[in-house]
Length: 499
Ligand code: D5M
Ligand code: FE
Ligand code: ZN
Image (cartoon, rainbow, N blue to C red):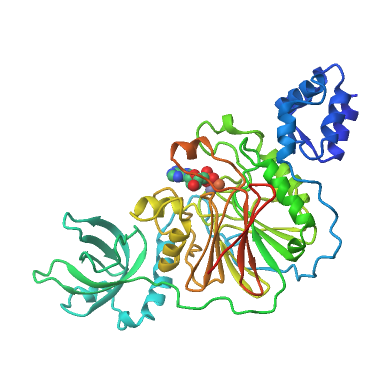
């Protein structure tokens, strides 16, 4: 009997925790309880735990009418009517323009960061050299011999505020290092210089010759642009981040509501692509005590459950999966795509890429980055916070770098090429990680932080971080129009976004 009951769950794509199997087999009538679960199409969990079995068994004893089930049902989406019109034909072509996957140069135990920083500096220096303010850029060793009109570029080694509100930074290039005083008011209010970012300085040597007084500090930045000109594409790209499958705070009801909407709403027929920028699953051992917050405590099973829930996505949608700091790849960035044994759990509608990654879809360039370095930007500056990651994303674009700080919360891999340099200007820049939903614009670039599918965790409660989950930001690839579909409530509202 055990086998036949388990087979039925298997056929329905329901995964069972081993403890759930035991609990089921302990019941006087396992088959009847199994039927009850299988027939509860709207509410049944993706992964059945011992707790679920106990709940269903006690519902049965209470005459199918438990209050908890009714409450659950109230929130559950209506059964989706079938889509009557055919989805549009999309190219389904996702080109990967830049990704470390398959190109990593980190070998054995050789930990040599010199090449990484050399590549970072030379790429960003070339960008700075094109800036009018820095015409005639010189090496620091030569700048040190001059008194006026010094123009140089360098990596920030150190930065500190003086008690008068000025900033003193040490800047280094491949020839020398130099102390720079940035007087209060020279840069923007609250301007911060992050360790290991590359800046340009225009200044003059102080009268005693010991330090350069900056007249201007230049960031590589992105050019002014009005952004995505119409290109005739008919497709929409949707962004679904931080799903955290396996966590006991994964928002299953909201996820189903979204799936139902995708299956029935006419707008969804134009969604050709879904990009998932990381934290696909909750992972194992990511932080101390995580085991108490997991519903699925096996990494492979978490991805199997992710595979099951992505099978529910309409089959005309091409899905791009990228790892984040909770996923099953090295933590050091750039992260390669998920390994083969995990990829094999998914069908060909899913494409796996690394973090970060430049994609080209229907003529538009998308820079996708999970966003772990937002932690370093926020702790290293005075004005950035977890509520407004779009401001942090702007600071990344100004610096043309996704994660400049070495040695803080974002581990970096000693690649010979710096994959975190923003070397080309995207149409859309998407991050996740902070679990809020923001859509904004900077110099024509659509900025998106793509929400999450996890309610507030104990860690976030402790740090007073309020997530904004179950939202799906969308961009029409043809027109550049952006909006958000909000699945946190039923019926779900749509939020328009003005640029
Ligand atoms: O990150 C979920 C949220 O928790 C996100 O807002 C960042 C925040 N977070 C995660 N780690 C840290 C550290 N070390 N300091 C501050 N804030 C942090 P997730 O990657 O989903 O766990
Ligand atoms: Fe996350
Ligand atoms: Zn994360």
